[in-house]
Structures are given as C-alpha cells and as structure tokens.
Length: 157
Image (cartoon, rainbow, N blue to C red; front, top):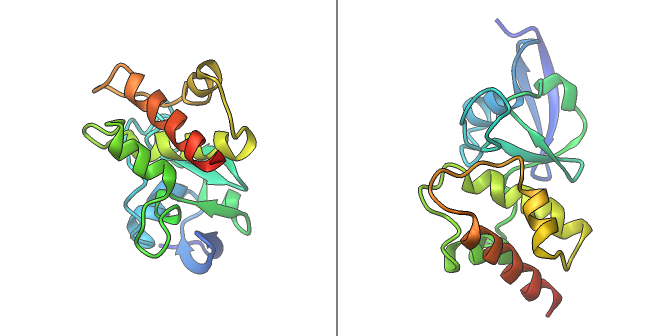
C-alpha cells in the first residue's frame, strides 16, 4: 500500500506517483513511470547499470529512495534523445561499438553525460575515473572510452 504521493521531476516533466516510503527510485522509474531504459543490475550499488542524473550528478537509482529525490531534477537515458534522434553521446556509443549486450550502457551513458557537462574535453584518465563505478562484462572498456572521446569531440565541433 502506498504511503504517500510524491511529486517527481523526471526528464523535464512533473509526475505525481503513489509510493511506499521504502520505494526505490529504480522501482518507481521502471514500474510506475515505465521508463525502462534505466537497468536493474546488481541491486546493491556495485554495477552502475541503474545510474541516473539527479540535479546533474550521477546517482545509483537502486540505492536511492524515491522520496529522497522529490522535487529534484531526475534525468534518465530517455531524456537524452531529442525528437527521436539520439544524442551525440548515444550515437557515439552505437557507432564506436561501446554498447554490447546493453545492460550497462544506459548507466555508462549517463555517467559519461555528467562528465561531459562538467568537462567538455576530458582525457582518457578522467573518462575512466568518471566511469569507474560502472561495470561492463562484455568489453575491455576501450570502445566505451572511444565513444566518450568521440562524443566530446563532436560536442566541441
């Protein structure tokens, strides 16, 4: 039974949702708002697959109570595409083969998005540091780093 009504700002839209006090942001995004781009991975804050942005900073949705982010700006992977067109970062992940199975990709992209907003020309070490909380089982991270570098270059052009 829901404990309260929450007002959440998700991807630029206001949503009123009924949620239990213990409801995790990941659950609300996926099960209530049907924003399934945010992936459920380890459920313990270890893999980063559920990374979203809260007020522009990366946050693990599997460890965040929905009530704790009420009234704050929440962004999911769905927010990056505009009018059905992939963002430069999403396109770079696709073109540079930074996405393999896809489970880690939304979290990687959101962590990279946060980095590029604060550092438009990060070096490889900064990219790797920004993505260090995101695990990928399919790649050696080379293609992921190349994708972030390509997106950074495109944004600067």
